[in-house]
Length: 209
Image (cartoon, rainbow, N blue to C red; front, side):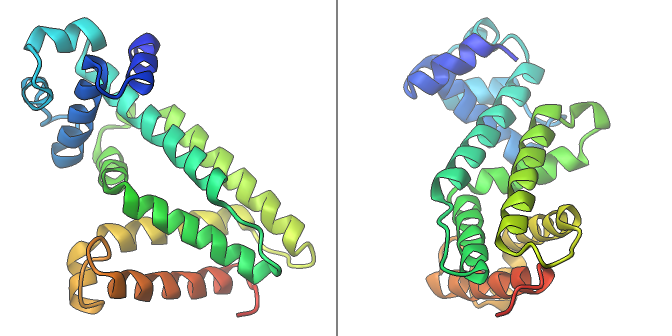
């Protein structure tokens, strides 16, 4: 990954590196790594094809940069929006809301996460795992601080809950069939799913409802 290109993209969203990174995010989310076309990325960014290789070097470097940016944004957004509650249950609800809102606000993150899991092992990025490990450690410590008397494998619980969130939010067909609409477009469907995810999270962490 070219750190200088990523830094420029983050500082100036209208720059050529940023436009290429945005386009790469879309194409990777739609097609995965293997079927993604760098020419299509350049076309969507409305830049000459040579600009892609000049700024980013290769498709692999763009793949890594896309995930690095999404991971950083996810971590920063969640940590910024976590609000302590008056009780352990309220705090868990706030954590649930922050996670749900982040995933709904960035649907490409859902699609890219599933795409990465389907790719060969060498394309599973350690930087993404490190971000999730960091968030999991943060969540485990926060849970222990809230309810130290509850004995639970918090790492396993966070793994189960985070994957439940990702799967439920990625399954748009299931949302439309069972919730009456997509959580990305229907407020009623979104609140039904949010309520159930709150309930499940409290149950997994053994916090009274």
